[in-house]
Image (tube, rainbow, N blue to C red; front, side, top):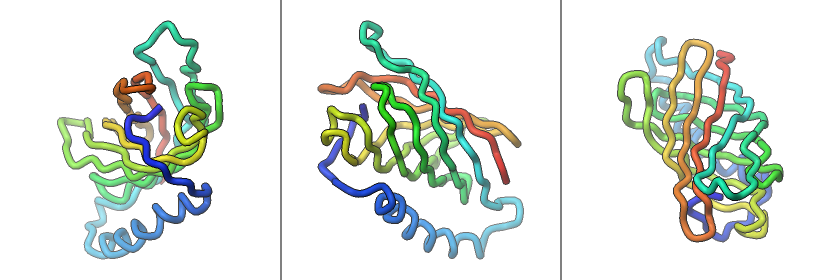
Length: 167
């Protein structure tokens, strides 16, 4: 279901570790110079909804799940979780959400990471995914809005993910 797919076969724990270790080292140095007002934030997401451009297909558009997001700066967040994908299959993801631009309360950028659970891509195995992402975050609640462009055998969609701030 995602626009970029490369042939990568990785177990889920290895996938999470591969994304987390380099980012943890970078974050440790960044936190030392960070003012108190820019403390890291932890968000829990409960999945969300998708709206596919091809309305004739019978996609699951209620994509409930569970995930965690750690925003260590206004521009960068690390995300990982599970959800029911548009094909009714379980999917797992780990990504970095890089959002260098902001217009009012809306952060803009892209989520880059690894995803699985789509039988048409890598036979359901792990693949690289990248998609444009917008985020709006209040003090306790937020949303992530993503876009999957239609390409080749991928039916595009708009994604909406709900999240609650823990810290």
